[in-house]
Amino acid sequence: MNKIVLSMGMLAVFMFTGCGSVDPSMPQSSVHVKKKALTIKTKGQTIFSSVAGSETLFKASHKLKGKHRAVAKIVVPTINDINKEVLRRGYRYYQIVSPTQINNLEGFPINNKNDLAAFLNPQTSMPRHELSMLETGATLMDNQKSQSVVSVPFLIFGTTEFNLVVRLVKEPRVEEIVWDAKN
Amino acid sequence: MRKLIFTALVMGTTLYAEVHAPKVLVDNSFETAEYQLFVTNTRHVAITQAMTAKLVYEGDIKGYYKKHHKMVEKQYKTAEEVSKRLSSMSGSLGNALYYKDVQSLQNIGVATIGSMALNAMLGGILGDETYVQVKDYYLDGKIQTRLIKYLSSDDGLDEKERKMVYSTTDNQSYHYRSGGFQSVTFK
Image 1 (cartoon, each protein chain N blue to C red):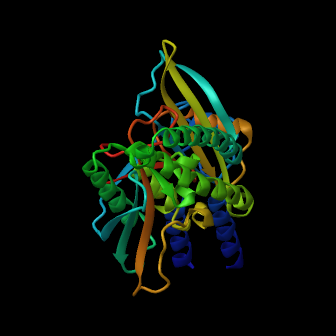
Image 2: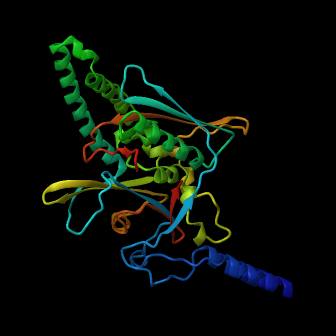
Image 3: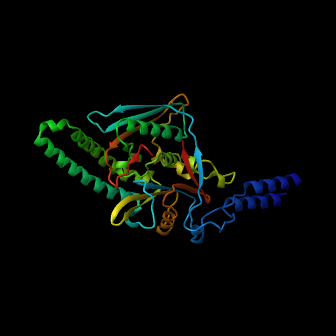
């Protein structure tokens, strides 16, 4: 009995330490990526307010009732609303200038909602189809404190908030990282 | 006893995770558990064979911020000069749209430089391993677009491994873990 338990235990250890087979038929210098499309059903309210003394800056604040750890639910509707607002103000390009962690003016390179949601919440983009049952849903990159830009309340009765400052750009240069409201 | 063995076998087959990794990574004994690659094309221009690439920056994110900071600071100084001259020329220009734009830029400038210092200081504590590769693409001597590849990883990658990751794609952001690759889009 003990021997069986021991050998099964060892087998399990081999499996979870990555002793799996390797598929050599994968193409070189290109990655086979599984594409996944998600639809966001929840929607909070985005409130826009202007920054004093400025024509090109405005604040966007998205509020969604409840505690939401999956920040894609907040990030994606916010960006969709900002795109509409930017077009309404007669501009096409803009930059996020606050919060600091995702400040395009400082050189933060992400300028589309899919990548931003995946960056702020790595779990949403994780390749679950390739994971074994025992691997956890949380990724190692979820531990990064630097990515917590959405304020999640302590209790479920609170409100999850995402506050941004956006700067409108008339004619961006090639090297400038800008968001395209029509894209 | 039979039940135990049977259960163990069933469990074994369900838990078994097959690893799919690109040959380029396998052949070169690529060792990391997890990374995310984000590709930014500043003008959304597709990269073709006819274009020539010029490397602007490759390496640690901190170095990129320092370089970028210098560039931005230069822009602010120019903008400041322009706004001073304009306002000295005519007081009415002070209320013009352009002047306000410059003013707002300067306001951000102060915040940027402050937060930049904070970033550099906290980077070592908060930061994971983050690298960037910035390339400009030219066609007939004219700049077409800038491609930024932002690589965020749970573990340190050496220079050779980073180069391999950058070479895997020009247009696709993805997440790698346990040999699986996935990219996600939202509606």
